Length: 179
Image (tube, rainbow, N blue to C red; front, side, top):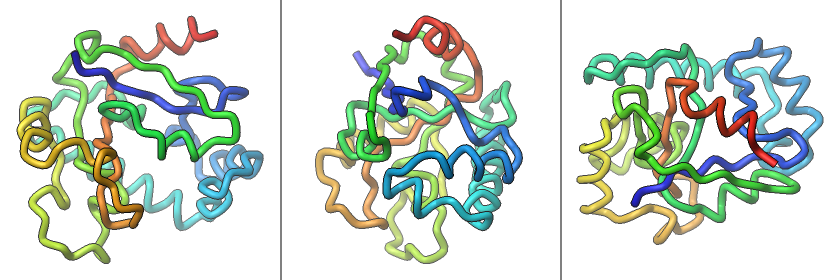
């Protein structure tokens, strides 16, 4: 069984996304978080680039036949990834079987969106600058394995399979029933 994992700050709760907020609102909320990941990503340029990447991923997903319901995704990962837990002071996670999702409303990147689409990463790996449907990501995982099992700790190296969830179902159920 494949499980999707969502990591979050315990005091904030799951599936609270900065993506749907204005840049100013996002920066204000993130300024209250004190992990190194959040401290180094508090500037306007980061949020502008994040919004650009989210729309790029959404467009590529639609081109492949995906059906995003939301304008911005909720983020998850395939499989457990201890690295993601380090993004939060008091980390928690929820795992949800992939069978609970409408596969037409979730896309995947082999690695975090930022390095996957980075212009500074030029290693010619086949998974760069691409968005995958479920069957496609399974084939890539079969070929390369789950990145968190071999991650070398560098920015360019994929550290997990990112899942972009473009639908609030079943997200809202887990958001409201957590604790």
